[in-house]
Every structure is written in C-alpha cells, then in structure tokens.
Length: 132
Image 1 (cartoon, rainbow, N blue to C red):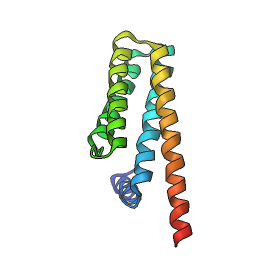
Image 2: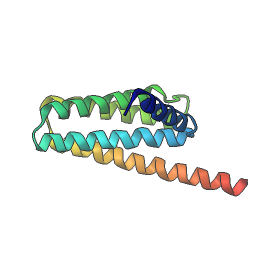
Image 3: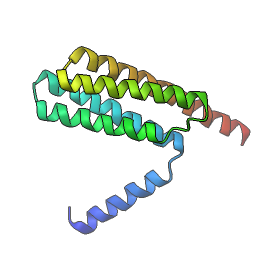
Image 4: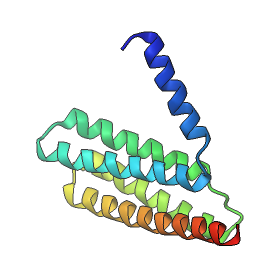
C-alpha cells in the first residue's frame, strides 16, 4: 500500500473512532485487553517470551489508561480503580514469574468485565432507541 492509500485508511479509521460513543470506545479497549491477554497466554505456551512480555506490557498500558480515565467521585469508579490495581499487580507478578494460572485468571476476569460493559452498552442503546 502506498503512503496515500495508507493515509486514506488512517483517516477512515480516525473518523470511525471519533464517531464512537464512550461505551463503544470502552468496549474497544476491553476487546484489545482481552486479545492481548489471550496472546500472552498463547505466547507463554509456545514459549515465545518476547511476545509474552510485549503482550503483558501492552495489557498493563491499557489498564493504566482505563484507570486514568475513571471518575472516582462515584463508587463504581473507585471500585473499578481497585480492580485495575489488582489487575496491574497480578500482571506484574505474572510477568515476573511467567505464571500461566494467574494469567488465565486475570484474562477470565477481564473477559467477564468486558461482558458486563457490553451488556450495559446494549441496554443503554436500547433505552435511547425506546426514548427516541
């Protein structure tokens, strides 16, 4: 792909992201988090430690971003902050010890949280449609 074609693709991608709701963006982050944690699990089984480390590092960056964007004035924000602290702590332990069991546990929890946010986003969309 030439640079002009890539720029057009990048513009389309940027436009799609800019038109997303906050809920859709949150789901996109959780999708990426679960994908990276799954990739880390697969890399650990190979073993491909460079890919494992990169995947865990990217997961930690996503969790840090999610934590930085929380509104802690509400109880749910404070609860999520504690959960993100737990994820970060566990993933740092996983990375240091290459612990597949703990990695699977964190991935499962992140996947369940993603499912909860997906259900909330769907309910919110349906509520907006019903009002409109």
